[in-house]
Image 1 (cartoon, rainbow, N blue to C red):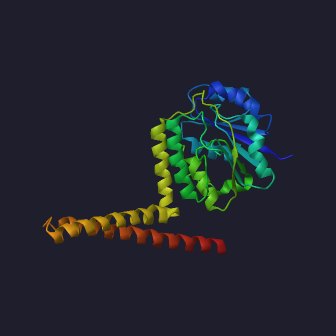
Image 2: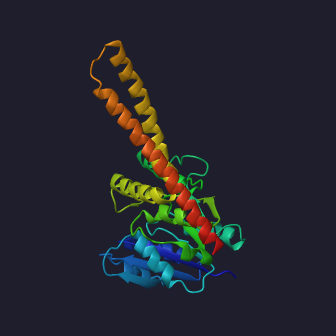
Amino acid sequence: MNKIAVILPAYNEEVALGSLILRAKRHAQQIIVVDDGSTDKTSEVAELAGAEVIKHSKNLGKGAAIRSGFAAVKDAEVIVTIDADAQHNPDEIPLLAAPIIEGKADVVNGSRYIKGNDENTPAYRRVGQKVLDTATSISSGSKISDSQSGFRAFSAKAIPYFRFKDKGFGVESEMLVDASQAGLKIEEVEIGVRYDVESSTQHPLKHGVKVLFNILQDMELKRPLYYFTLPGLIVVIIGAILSLFFFRDYVTGVSINIGPTLVSVMFTLFGTFLMFTGIILDSMSRMILQSRNRI
């Protein structure tokens, strides 16, 4: 029998936590609750329900909580992370674990959007998630339909590849990028979700902007063609078009000021600099990756 461990990062989740633990115990041999500095009875409820409890003295963030949970896993072949807010169904744990047990994947992402938009997802939330999904897919080089899902399964061999650089909610995207960069097999399976429960301790806009910023920072090093070259190309095209218009006006006498033309030329040169920066950094990144693969 394949041993499954379940990690529940929790921050003030005393209401739903007990039932989640009891339901998860039907599918896993080890249940770990990481109390990330809760001010309610999260730890007490977790202990009463029979889970192992790790306590953070203060709120460190979801990334830090997952890292602590992974460190406490004992000899499990499959590690499942699930949010402690009751949005996800613990009875779907075998669904996520199956591709790993069968050797088809190293990381399984539970997705709400494999078949498109979920009709129960609030429109404003889905727009933001779509932006993050696109940015994560570009940064990772893998097609991801639900980059912010907290319901995932991992093979034991995948764990060392995660950096946990992001201590907060940005860890969801970061782990997918890390897995893809390490050459791990990522698969998505369809999951259900509930929106009749309180699900986030952060404002959606603040959360989304922060995660997007972290993804873009990663993209600067791992996808320089997208981060530098593509924007540079756009700047070059805009600068070239403006230069032609301004120069035409100057030659035809519509405008006797050469200044706008010079500014447009500088704009074009700046875009060219960005393009070549991206190309050079991409070449360096590929050389470093090839060197690592030879070692």
